[in-house]
Amino acid sequence: MKFLSVLILSFSVVSFAFAGTKEDLEQVQRNVIELQRQFWDLGKQLETDSTNFQNTAKGLQTTTDQLRDNQAALNAKLESILNQMQAFNEKLDETNRRLKELSSAGMQRPMVVTPGETQSDANTAGTGNTPSGSQVNEPENGSSPGSMNPGATQPVAGVARVPEQQLYQESLAQYTRAKYEQALRGFQDLLDQYPRSAYADDAQYMIGESYYGMKEYVDAVTEYDKVVKRYPDSDKVPGARLKKSFSLFSLGKKGQAVVELQQIVQLYPSSKEAQIARQRLAELGLD
Image 1 (tube, rainbow, N blue to C red):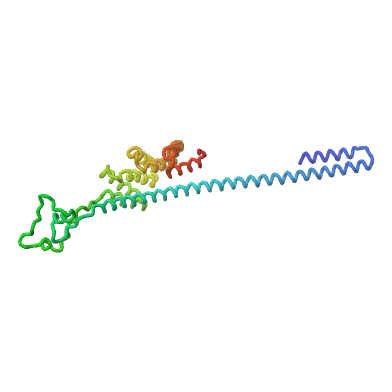
Image 2: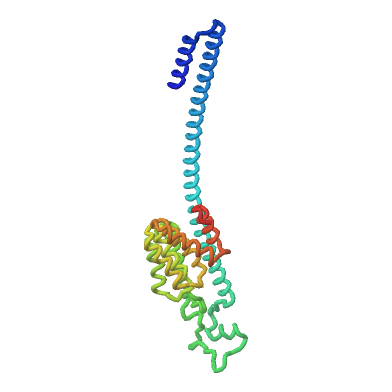
C-alpha cells in the first residue's frame, strides 16, 4: 500500500508539472484516478485471497485433527474387536473339547452295579459272556446284596474325572471376570500339576493373556514366547505372536513389534492373526 501511495503522489506531481493543454491535464488526472482505482481493487483482492488462504489453512488443520482422532478411535475399536474375537475363540475351543470328551464318554458308557448283582454279573451282562475263571458269589446266610446295606449308593465304574479340565475352566472363568491374578495362579497350577495335559498350551497362552490384562507387558512377552518355544505345533502360536507384538508396541519397541507382525504374515498367511497383522502394518504405512 505504501508503494501505491508513492505512485499516486508521483502521478500527482507529474500532473502539476505537466505543461500541456487543459485537455491533456484532465486526461492525465483521469488516468491517475483509474490507476488509483485499479490499485485499490488489487489491494482488496489481495486481502480477500489472504483471508481465504487463512480459512483454508484452518480447515486443513481441523481436518487433520479429525483424521487423527478417527485413527485413534479405529485403533481402539480394532483392539476391542481383537479381544472379543480372542474370548470367542477360547470359548469355542473349550466347547469343542467338551464335545469331544462327551463323544468319547458315549463310546465307553459306565456300568452301574445294581442291587441283586455283583460286579462280575455286571461285566457278564455287558459282554454277554462269563469271564473265564470267574465265579458268581452267592450271598451267605440267605441275605441278598441289596439287603446288606440298604439305602447305600452303589459305586459307578468307568467314570473318569478330569481334574485338569476343571482347573482350566475355573481359571478361565476368573479371567473372563477380569480377576487376572487368580486366573494366573490357576493356569500356573495346571502346568505344575499336569505338565503333559492337553490343556497345557492353552494354559500357557492364558498366562500371557493374564499378564497382558494386568498391563504387565514385559512378563506378557516372556509368557507368549514360551507358547512358541514349548508348543510350536499349537494353534495358539499365531495368537501368541500377535499379542506379543501388541505388548511390544505398548513397551515402545516399535521395530521389534513390526518384525513380529511381518513374520506372522509370512508364516501364517491364511490365519485371522495374519489379517490383523496386515491391517496394523497398513496403518503404519508398511504394507
